[in-house]
Length: 133
Image (cartoon, rainbow, N blue to C red; front, side, top):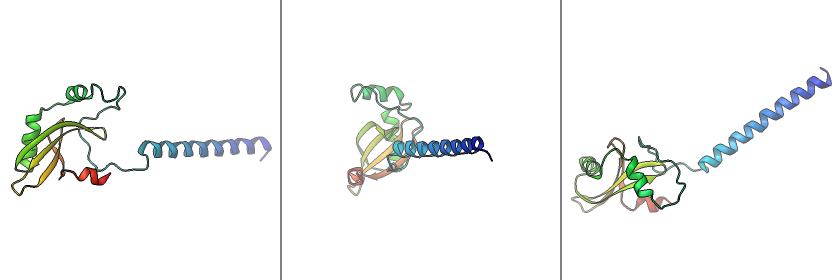
């Protein structure tokens, strides 16, 4: 093997190594080393905000395919009780309705309903998301 071939092989190996490091770095940066909690995905994805909080409510409402009453009905079918609050939220890029329900045993449940198709994605005790952070 002459010097020119050796240099070509070294360049190929260095290029592959550089590419691998770049891909690992971008994957880590994109996920920030964390997993989404809770781990669900809605049928409607919300693009990253570019204009801050202003106008987000209108933007989210335009993306939703079901209304708050249908989200409430879906949540109540899963968790019987009384609806206390319904809000359209961007949860880690997922468009969901957060439906707070007071159960017969006076527990407060937070039901995440897909704003695209009305399916229940997640049920948890209201306030648990603060404990997770």
